[in-house]
Structure formats: structure tokens, C-alpha cells
Amino acid sequence: MYELIFLIALSLYFLQIIIFIIGAGKKYNKISEADLPSISIIVAARNEENNILECISSLDNLIYPSDKIEIIIVNDNSTDRTGEIIKKFASGKSKFKVLESTDKIGNLKGKANAIANAIKKSSGEVILTTDADCSVSPTWAKTLASHYRDDVAIVCGYTNQFDENIFEGMQSVDFIYLLTVAAGTMNLGKPLSCIGNNMSYRRSVYEEVGGYEAIPFSVTEDFKLLMTIHSLKKYKIIYPLEAEGLVTSKACSDFKSLYWQKKRWGVGGLDSDLIGYSVMASGFVAHICMLILPFLFSVNALYLTVFKIFTDYYFIKSVYKKLNLKLKFSHFAAFELYFILYVIWLPISVTFSRNVKWKGREYTRK
Image (cartoon, rainbow, N blue to C red; front, side, top):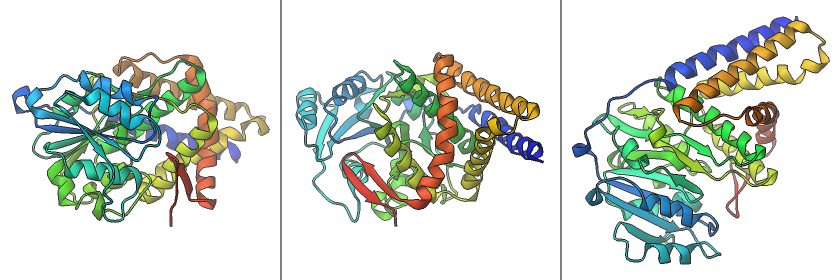
């Protein structure tokens, strides 16, 4: 009986992987360089003195028509040298604007309030966002903006992480895995998630839904905006798989910060719909089966588990190849173990506690 449960659970998981591959592989036409829209790039930075210089230096190297780009860096009430570093770097650079997140907009808090402040003072037709602990490729902005045909409202891109060791490497593999799931479903017309450190949206559509101030507060404000725009059922929302649009972020430095990152994502994911919960449930059940494998003493169950691991490997490796990244097997192996544990732990944790700690602030989802 347990072997049949194993077979059903892992078969459903495998079918989902096939769907994700099909969706993530979709290609999209681009507009000409002459038709590129004006853009506003926004970064909200809070206590990022160790990261912000690398981020804004990469933004300074972007390849984009100089008369169509502005870069807005918001110092979100930092208590370290973040604001000082931003001002010194931006001095004399006309495309940079520096803001302080002092105005409270509606009931917004934290990062969402900082971004909303910046959007109100921006002018671009398209808003691009990344995070202060990220470095963007020189072609990042141009790649995302080139997809803004008239019917497109949101364009997302892939993010990997610096992976100098196994702990960082497993996080990077996890990012690529999760973002490919997001891209696969989004490109098939059913957005389930996104990540704000590599995201863009059309200003007119943002204003159409009333901006962040009209959206119920969430610790994952990017996901909430995505689903609100999707609910209009009027525009395309796409997630191209392109190395030229890659962003690289800093991995969490320790298990404590990784715990709170996952907890924040899990709490934000409570706003998912039935399909989103189905995808999460499939992963939960498949990994429960893997966790109990040592207690079954079953050769068939072992074969199914090995098949699942190989499926994950070739799924992730194919995306790494398209992004011109190298997948280290040691990083993948660490990810597989880590993935089993947190996919099981996360829904249990979120069920009993909605508390989130993020950037020195605490939030509780009602």
C-alpha cells in the first residue's frame, strides 16, 4: 500500500515538473531598441552598508538609453552608514535620485512604503525593482524592458545567488528551482509567485490597481501586487528565461536569517489560491514520502526516490545551462537534503505562527 502512495505522490510531482519545464521554456517577441520605454529603477535599502555600494555600482553600469532611465535609491530609515554611502556615490550622477523614506503612505509599512514613495516621485513608463543586496547584469534593464509590448503588464527575471560555499550554493539552487516553478506557471497563465529583486511592471497598470496603498499589506508586497494585477484579467504577465536579465543576490549568511527569509515567504504564500496550495501540497507529500523512506526497507520506494532526485537534477541543470551558470553537484546534493526538510517544516511552522522578523522589524499576519 505504501509503495502505491509513493508512486502516486512522485508521479504527480513528476507531472508538475514537466508542466514547469514547458511553461518556463516559452519564448516571447521583443520590441525594437528604438521603442524601449522610459524606465525608473527603484531600490529600497535598509541597513545595507555592506551591500549597497556593489548594488548601485552595477546599476551605474547598465546599458540603456541615457534619456530614458532614472535610478531611485530610497534610504529606508537605516541606522547605519547606508544613507551616507548612497549620497556619496550618487553625487554628480544625474540619472541617480536619492530619497529618504519619511512620508507614510496610507497604512503601508517598511519596504512597501519606501517603494510607494519612490514610485510617486518617479517618471518612467515602466518600474523595475531590485534589492540592495543584489548586483544586476549590464543588460538587465534592457532585457526586461524589451518585453513591454502593449498588452504586457509585468515582466519578471531570474535571480541566482553568490555561491562561494555549499551553504550559499544550496540557497542559489533553491532560488533557481523556485523561480523556475514561478516562471513555468506564470507563462502558462497562472501566476503563483514572483520575487521583487528582479521584477518590473507598467506604471499605468500599477496606478490602475491603486498602487501599493490600495492593496492589503503583505510581508511579500511583490507577490500581492502580482496577484492584484493578475486579477484584472486584462494583461499578460510573463517570466522569460534569459541569461541577459539575470540578477545575483547575496545568500543568507546563517541559518537564523535563512529561517526568517523562508518564514516570510511562507506567511506571504498564505494568500495563494487553490492551484498554489495544490503545488505546495504536492511537494509536501512527495517529500514526506522521501523522509520516511529509511523506515520502509523497500527497494521499489528507493528506486522511486532516486528517480525523483534525478528529475530534480536535470530540471535544475537545464535552467542553469540556459542562464549560463554552472551547477555544482555538491550544491545540488545539499539543496536536496535542505529542500526535503524545509518543504515539510514550512507549512507546519506557518500554521502555528504568523510572526515574521525582517530587516529589524517584526510583523504578524492577522
